[in-house]
Length: 289
Image (cartoon, rainbow, N blue to C red; front, side, top):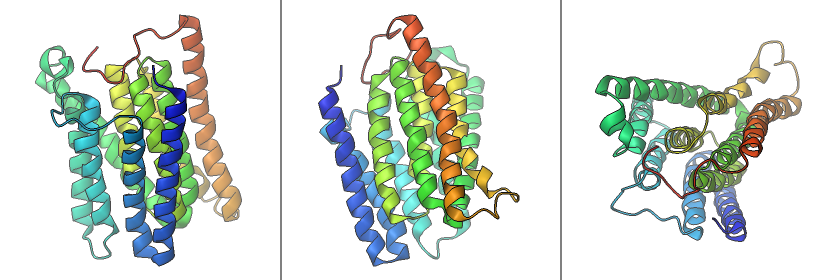
């Protein structure tokens, strides 16, 4: 069982580190803010995980190791390329598609899903389906951030990550919950830079939901709702709402996402209480059902 005091310390550390680094970058200029936020979120995330004792093991035997060693660094590099002023769009999108496409197979590598439960065709269909949703959301939210909605969008993404973490914990996968809370704090701290990088949050959310569903007991409907929730951030950009001033639209953006993900957490909490506790033994990681 995780120590709640250490968990809070890790969350605060991730928030402060990412916030301070992003704030420094913002003072330098727009390009530095974009690049600095990517670096800030990553630094806050890894230091927070390190404080919890969650460090990558080079044997890469578990899904969390693959997240820390392969998935997050990959999206980190794609986001850094995306901050370059002359980076061709095809290169950025190629990177996004590669990260999204390989995310599920990497996280599920060595599990019973890929070894015995699924046929190769089923594995391809699941991976492609998740990748398509992830890449589409990544592109649409990046476009939304370019409209100057970066601060409210970051808050909405952080709220979704918190909800996914709590839902994972209530579903018996505390390890994913810990990682998700640290990531949400890093995303929130990085919002200080007001940049347009959303990839780490999007890929991190997809990873939490994937591992929570396949290695924990996160319900498929809860995972689907949480995955779609950030797209509600587009609602205030509808033609009829564009006439409203920026601040009310930002509040509406955060509120819409928060209400939806809050409903998921409430339902997960209700089911948790009805079950009388965790349905499975809490662990820090898993390799299969």
